[in-house]
Image (cartoon, rainbow, N blue to C red; front, side):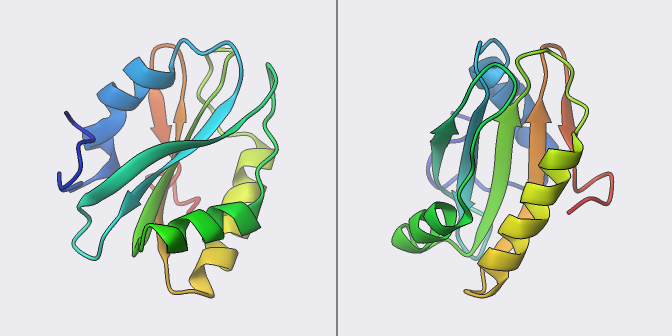
Amino acid sequence: NRLAKGCRIERPSSAFLYLQTLMGSYENEVFGSVFLDNQHRIICFEELFRGSINAANIYPREVVKRALSVNAAAVIFVHNHPSGEPEPSEADKRITAQLREALSLVEIRVLDHVVVGAKACISMAERGLV
């Protein structure tokens, strides 16, 4: 219910518990997105890419295509670390920058990238990485 259509996301941490419950126990890395409208109300949450135990290939073109298809104005990215440690990697920082750049071309804002671990979530926006 926390990520139900129409719910407003005031800050990404309001969705941490749901995201951790949903993705914290995955054995493989999964990358998803919460697509939001102009008022930061949820349009939908989707798992976009699945990977191996320590990586997932993420394609900016596919993310942009999906965001446009649901008419998103903003997004919050989320992925899990199967190791249980939510600390963002250098690869996480790079893909976030690439996605932000690609989405900015079509005027879609990246609000955050949440990394889910076994016992905690980290907001890259709160760390100044978005």
